[in-house]
Length: 228
Image (cartoon, rainbow, N blue to C red; front, side, top):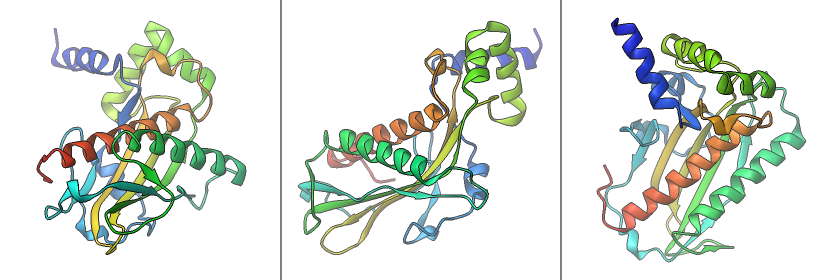
């Protein structure tokens, strides 16, 4: 069996249950910076399972924080975006509620910031919609799944998928000190769960991924995991 066939089978195996697919670091790096984060030069490439670009302050007593203040999600539209204001509001509200749900498993989410409170800011950027009909075909029909996986080897993405990028920042509610910064991008994966979704389902899955990752990482830090 040729090396390319082995690679293709490996891809199919890896993405069989993947709801989202991580965008390449090069794609995240080349995306225009929105100006949302306080200090972009702090960012550096993350490891596997982390945000593509990240920074974590290594001098923080994470256990000293007693609550989280989550700011409203900011939607930053591309210049050529055709996402109308109502859809932007719906997507932002979805991201906010998803973040709040996951972060509240770490610490109480409160209505104001102050000392010993983590201030979490997130922005949704570079959002693209999927093609629901063709997307369903690409993940349900075996031949289409095979072709889609083959395409992904050369393009790092699947056909008819939606995508989104996000920028996030955590600061100290008392001093404003930057504790965490992150930039990540996710596209739709080939999980059968992606069949039958709406035009924004891939973007919604990306938001769920980021909310879950944020909560897990904060829990790890509060448990004494190293920042790097």
